[in-house]
Length: 110
Image (cartoon, rainbow, N blue to C red; front, side, top):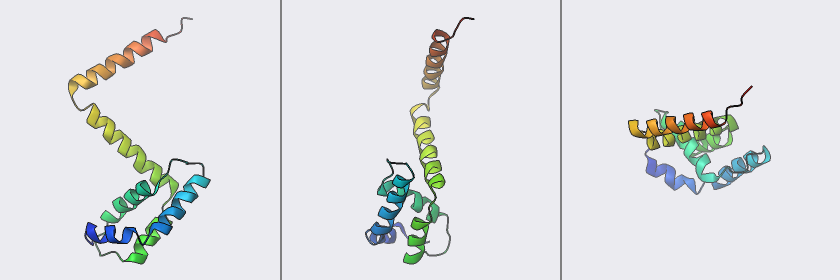
């Protein structure tokens, strides 16, 4: 795979494709999509390739990115951030306590 530096040079070249993909996601109702997140998603996909990537392949990956792939990446990133926040046992215990407190105060008597 090519080094990260080459991709950063190409980033300005593929801005129209990135904008097109963001516009597509906006039309599909996902208004918070942005070029940087689309770029990061494509970079993660390309990191898995072993052979060198040419510019036209990079553009292809941008234009064929599916909304479900994009959303999956955002979801996983969100889970990873949450895991960092609750990485200690004390934090997890606090979270579980908050959940129990919330659940017990919102129970309905029948």
